[in-house]
Image 1 (cartoon, rainbow, N blue to C red):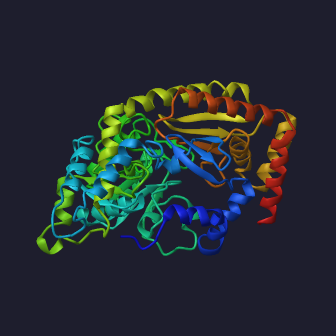
Image 2 (image 1 turned 90 degrees about the horizontal axis):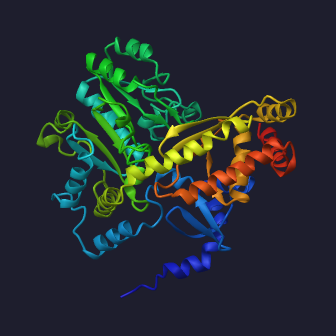
Image 3 (image 1 turned 90 degrees about the vertical axis):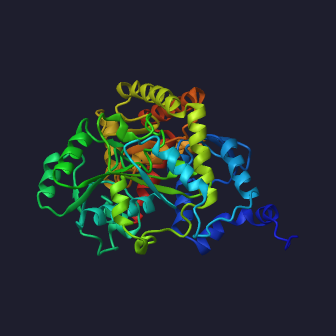
Length: 461
């Protein structure tokens, strides 16, 4: 039986209206921004770390949907799992039973964090962070959370309260009374803890904004301070978790670190069904869910749905069977080392940092007189324009999708699907080298585009 709805026919008929539909009904600035920087492509299909535009041109994805596409697009195992769960006609989300899939996924996740005991499943990274903030406050009986400057933990109100970037916070006050410190500042953390009202310290082991890594030993030292003062450590692994940095979790790079709560999402979805998870210690969960009266004190309408659980189980199965973490360590090391070799060659290229397949490429003030003048022109108009100058030709000339790592930052962030291979590394490094050659040539299309960006930046003031 059918009501005549045909998705393929609908896309064939109306797909060409995509930018107009967004401009009229959704965020009006998105199509405007994409048109401005020349990112207004029409992509038709995707597989793995590649997608193809309407003309059949292959593009290399070094963005992975902001980290969501950990296994690339349309991994056959994840795809089959979703077909299987739909075909099973499960009585999903009855709310008054205990289906097996959430328990099975929790078991598989906790196997990678043996010091943790329980899991709450929500629908996103920000929801995973919201859960951790609520649980930490309730379990400790304290109101305040310490976070890091330039951190990104989500955009809902609680998560925004621990977001260290003013551009996201502006205009949404009042937020929760949480307190920022500099990443790596143990003295500041201890000073806040001495006040006796801190429930937790939430931290990204590697910050997404700028790809800034916590200093060696910081997480372990912070954990010791927190335990001494009766506060909790929350590791936000929404972007860094599930193999991204060359270990299953990024906090595992540092011996002895055992967070009390861990937030994951993004790659756990397999790129199909939104899912977030908050892992925690047994005593924390038992405090929150302390009686039958409190059985639903924290819940999510779509949390633990069968499709999300099936996707998560398939993702973990693939990671184990294909050796994804070891692959990331090897290919990520190759990519980083090849990029580091370019730093002495190009004066505009200042640093390459990161772990695994989370890499930041930072640009800075050149030494030669001619390039200094062009650099100053861009910086006067708006900081971050040079990085945008690099991102655009990578896409338009070389069909490689990347992103600037944050507003007003001269940093490109690479977070490709974890399945890229040596050929993809070679393709990116070759293209990036060509863009650097053009930038250091002192003229050409790259700097012409820079002048266009300057005019647009000045016009928007």
